[in-house]
Length: 105
Image (cartoon, rainbow, N blue to C red; front, side, top):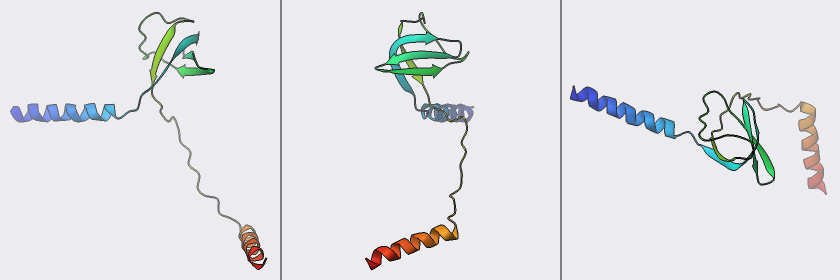
């Protein structure tokens, strides 16, 4: 029984570290616009539009003009990697000719 309790506690400790690895950021400023799917905040001269959903926790009265601090994370939605473009034989020859001409001068 003690072994199970120790394993459970070790698992919980490991799980807490994995969740802590996510970087969080924050922006503070007056609210310019509130929509069902976003909140727009003025930060200096820039307008920051932060997405929100049904799971976004809101405390206090969120309305235009309120000063808020928003905690957010950045998460990739999709990634498209493209391979390197191979140069054509003509482009390679032109580069070689340009290097040769530069050396002659």
